[in-house]
Image 1 (cartoon, one colour):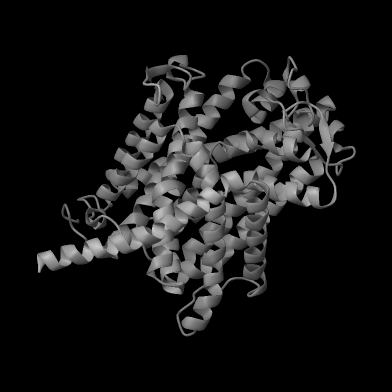
Image 2: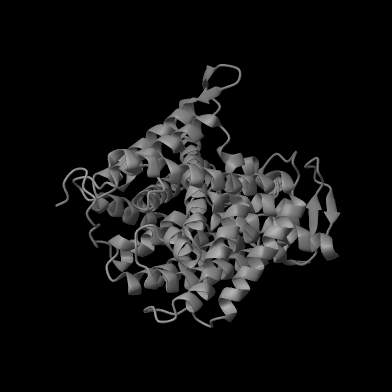
Amino acid sequence: MNNPGSTSQFKQSLSLFDATMIVSGSMIGSGIFIVTANMSRQLGSPGYILLEWVASAIITLIAALSYGELAGMMPKAGGQYVYLKEAYNPLVGFLYGWTCFTVIQTGFIAAVGVAFAKFTAVFFPALGTGNIILNMGFLKVSAGQLFAIVVIILITFINTRGIEYGKLVQGIFTSTKILALAVLVVVGLYVAFNGHFISGNFHNMWVASSVNEKGEALQNPLTGFALLAALGVAMVSPLFSSDAWNNVTFISAEIKRPERNIPLALLIGTLIVGALYILSNITYLAILPLHGNPLGTDVMSNGIAFAKDDRVATAAVSVMLGSGAAYIMAALIMVSTFGCNNGIVLSGARLYYAMAKDKLFFRQAMKLNSKGVPATSLIFQCIWASVLCLSGTYSDLLAYITIASLLFYALTIAGVFVLRKKQPDAQRPYKVFAYPVLPAIYVIIALAICTDLLIEIPKTTWPGIIIVIIGIPVYFLVKKSHAMQDTAIK
């Protein structure tokens, strides 16, 4: 057993099943239940919407296969941070860790926590984000935000008690939501085929259009370069919904036979989620009309494009099961978001632990508690995620960082090429399939999407680049601070 404050090694106690549950559970949050509404307004075409989800699944799978090689080479706590450090230099690794701590990981935790609170409010309205309990003018705090913080603290506490508790929660909640999504698909398609809903959206599948800037029902035709630009922007939604699969690499040091189980978990987990996402969207399109009217009075007249609060899944279930749909979907999304946050909280702390060991984060974060987990790192993460909850800007921060996240994925996968040159003799228990074609395809696609986003939606992409750049002076300040502390100790 580790002593309090020790810096001893982690215990390898996670099986292939546990690792797969972290991959799948971290990916499935609330996105799959809502983002198709925005995609329908951007593309207006069933064919292109499904194409985006298929492309997202393929892109994510290619990335996961590429990460499998790196994970097998370096089964260390910190995962992607370690890969970037080894492929390039400590600065690049730090910039990734800095971005994760400031926005990516903690921003996800905050946003998913607030989503949990919003759907809890379906049962207990007093816990809603619309219930403002503190208004200071420049700062408004809702009951939903405070409840989200309580939930984040609870998940953090569970994970400080040991990896066994964290993996138990992850296994239960992830299994439940995978089963629930599968049932949603099966029942939905059964209802669609038997209710003759399936024919409407599948005529003129490839005629694309977008809703005008005022959000009215008027459709603007999309062709040529305008269509390509719209496809690039719309790709953000399925990629965001599929994100966080890489979290399993952060806990590499705690997985049994990591050289085998991490690549397998990445493969199995991303395949499961990709298939469920594609089938879920086929179900939505089979039940609900794609185009709708923002002034519609029921789910069929609103359609997918103007589903109330973008809750497409709730609208589909209401057609399937009637008036109790809101409660059924609220319960499912609560399960989904709680399990998602558990996986993100559990894994993120290991990243900051690895940075602390390299003297690039608070020193206390490198300590393991008596249960063998980085409790202090978990607490730091919890505090900052809670601040983001209170800031009310978490959704903006997530939008800002989408491009940075894609760039780091591309940079990491490019690291496969770099490390093949730098460390040709390193042990590689698993080598990426179809090298160098698949990794190259991912890098090209990711950079193309980034370029499109910078051109088409600069207000929500350039800030992400700025956050990464700010990390450069922070890196040198951190290095200087640790050097001064080391000198003082001597």
